[in-house]
Image (cartoon, rainbow, N blue to C red):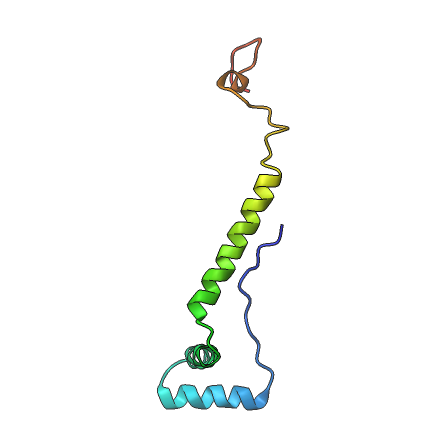
Length: 95
């Protein structure tokens, strides 16, 4: 099963990097902060609410996990099915 993890962004475009630096300088904020705001505004211009997109991805992941669990909840090979299975039959000690 694959669970996507956050990854860093390495901008190798000199113009984009210069724009981010200049925006950070003018606003007094970090480059990451100004890029986040710019991307949030861009998504809003296209009618995509960034929080909804994030929630949708989380919901999709939850549905995927539920579907995989429903297909195989892992009960078939369980050695412990009831409290007595926790103890050795001969000694009565925990296994």
